[in-house]
Image 1 (cartoon, rainbow, N blue to C red):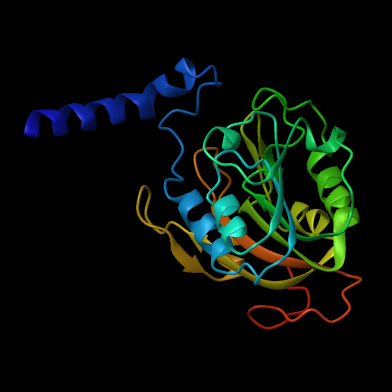
Image 2: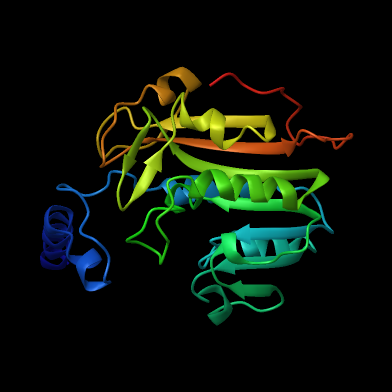
Length: 249
């Protein structure tokens, strides 16, 4: 057991330094030292799944992968549509509609009550990963399209990297005081939370918005922003955690 544990530790350190797993998967090599974002998806999934409104609802998840959010929505009686460039979720789940392709190129019927955009919009328009096409405003275009697909009383669950504004090609964008307001300008914020890692490679901790938005620009890590948004044409939906008008960012 001790030998296996030691070998696992060595393998993780080598991968962090040389990006071996990414190279084997055909992905671009990560920055030296690797990405210090372990646990990000667990936090995002927990935030979203714990806040989903009761069904039935018509829902869309963009960039779904093998997301646990889909089975959570199905369990609530949602009519679920998932969009991704690869059909990973269809290999383990059934009972939902799947569309393969670039979200910006797909023709979707408006009127979704719930739209999930979990750790995906920061990649849109950055060529070199996930089959994305190069478009400096791909993320902004995606959010404008989402606004047009959302029902008047609907809600968007959005999670993104936050910190000082930066673009780390081909990996992701980080949204700060300049880009984040542009990203969500079609929406009002119902509720949000921010998380940071006070110590490198340590656990995430909830944070004030200012501390998260001032997180130093670094390709290896960022703070997290998790938000529930609603359309500015909102007509009376009850927010799950109380309604908050747009938070200044």
